[in-house]
Image (cartoon, rainbow, N blue to C red; front, side):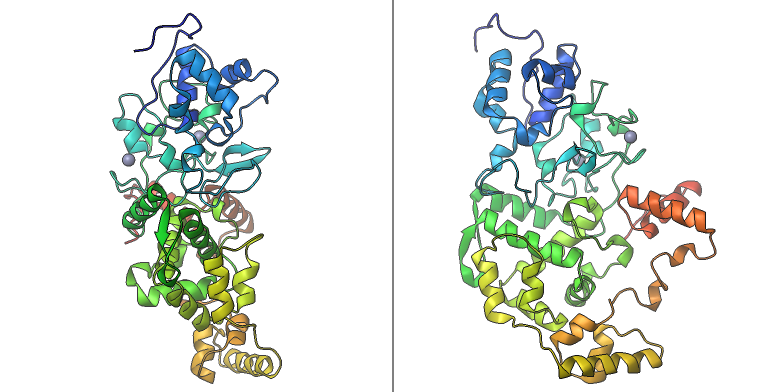
Length: 431
Ligand SMILES: [Zn+2]
Ligand SMILES: [Zn+2]
């Protein structure tokens, strides 16, 4: 037991098991009758009006000061920040680099950031509701205890959760509309992502992972490759073809496309979309690099396609696999042939998906993949992105599009939820 120092603040809540630094910081503020922003201005005079994402940006000076005033060791506080995963989830932090699996929370300048996830059912069971640092990892999408998707924004007003901005205390509240997070329930996940989550957490704790024929690699390397593949499946020209390729081999991934809007930036994906995409990417990472190479070749991706998606350096196990197994795209006569085949299909009233082109021309070709129309948007799911709103007035359609975008969901999921609420139906099941 440490002697009570006269320098201690009167309110000194202990750091709870697995609690994030920003969660604890907000509780220290509340215990001393302050808002988080007020406490921040005391400990960082001249700092910003609102604290930055302290799970990442609490530096050693701030941690030492908080330690001096509360009696909790600097080491324990450091373990409540992203520093816990320094050298395992990421290689090092220069304060600028964008982390693959630890997206920012709250707001960065005017941009809404959805990096703070939470399980409302865990909070409801807590004697003292608090945020777990693991909820910041974006490959974690479901609470293993409650088997529900984590929330990454307030279901009432769609603002990202930001504990450092909240005024109310005694719980986790939406800083914007004041809603108590314990009043919400996460949706059922479209697939069970828990086994993959557990494996990735295990990779983090041991610091390395065996990667097929490349043997053991650092955990941040494995996670980086997983992130690159997730992005290839999340958006871009081959996203639909890759999803189809995987779903054809793993039926649990054969899901209505409404679960997976196509987007560029992985960090903006909802937990619903991530729960599927991370599982799919993990499937392609198995038996590295053979399964990934087979998928890339079958959907017609060239080495150029799989390399251009990411800035900066590629992990060796990725670059090497791509370099050796995927070649540059073919050009010239093949291209004309494929264009001709597309024309034939169009005249027959078909969209020129990769599968249709393959049936027509036989064999596989990269050019075919490049020129094919996206699959999975075929007739079964209607024509065009907003077909579900056919016959609806233009202004309602536009308002619905914006509202769905704000909620991070596709129009289909957003509309489904709204209609269910209106008709008092239970929440969506997508199994
Ligand atoms: Zn939970
Ligand atoms: Zn809200």
